[in-house]
Image (cartoon, rainbow, N blue to C red; front, side, top):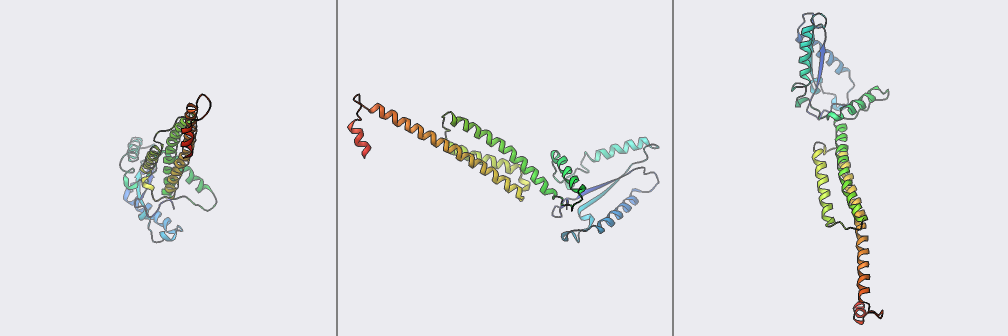
Length: 254
């Protein structure tokens, strides 16, 4: 369940054989290990979509041997260095084996897998791609959420001081465009994921809800400013006798 068939990339299974001092060839060891793996694979209860799937369709078996640590210590250390290089070079880290698991999410992923495996209930491991998609989309959403709220906090503070936000509509349009394009750029590999759609929709709603709130504050400010301006103009037009000029009275009736 962890290795989705629709993903063309395989998973490398690395077997490290210790104390390889009996003179047997690496090829013979490979044959034995491959046969054992195929035997195990054939006994595994597979979903319908995996019924005709062979072990080699999903996995590439690798083998690495180490001589006896005590009796051939120098060779053991040298081979250990070669093995280490395989995990840091282009061998086991090549694109063919990459599952795009971000390094910062690896501990979370293994923790989830281990908890499900150690649970006695029926294993319901999340698809690897689904798990990664959820992590990436959540991370991208959180990043844009902080940027959005930082901008709106500035606008809220500005309107609380009685200062209008100039060109508010255009600024909101730019904020929506920038936030969604940044989110899309960071989650472009997971556009078919339901998590991608859900988190993107959340960002849109977040911006629109806060934009509506700021707009209402702006509207209230404009109403108050218009009222104050009207009062000021009215007072300035009142004559010293306290009577509104007839011309203004006639204008107000039209």
